Length: 212
Image (cartoon, rainbow, N blue to C red):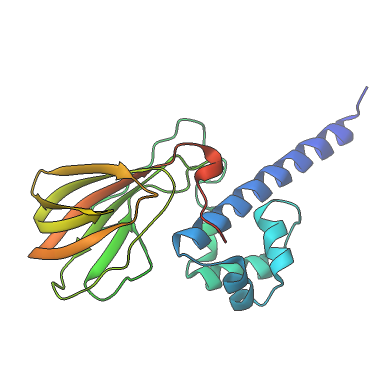
């Protein structure tokens, strides 16, 4: 029969593993939300790529000093890495108006913002809801491709949007749904400012992460 000390040691070990999983998942999600590779973040944080990969996959523990370096490399506070750790299952997440996490996407420029409205979803991210604001009518956009299905809902302005070979003119209240692996992008900003929701649904856990 296990002693009290042995039982306490097992509980402590389980808690450490749980925290390690949370930190690894959070670091990976933040890295991918900023379109950064393991090499990018490792170089900024001053650690090896192998160590960062082990941290993300909960194969190695790390010090608070290293976690602070990783937080700085990702452009967040150290407390952000621990946010929502050990929340009870079913806990809701409220994001107030204007408080969505602003993320950098390929092609992002001044007057073009992405706000992520839900995050820290655990080890298997199932969806990403973005509030996208576009203001510069002269801006040109690269084509995007990603796993899953994307749903757009126009809130303000008028936008011509390209999906593959087709273009669609979207105004307030219009919606558009398409497969994310088809090249897509805003084709022309017809009436600015433009705001729309973009919700990406990932079809399976193994499709949630783009190539590093």
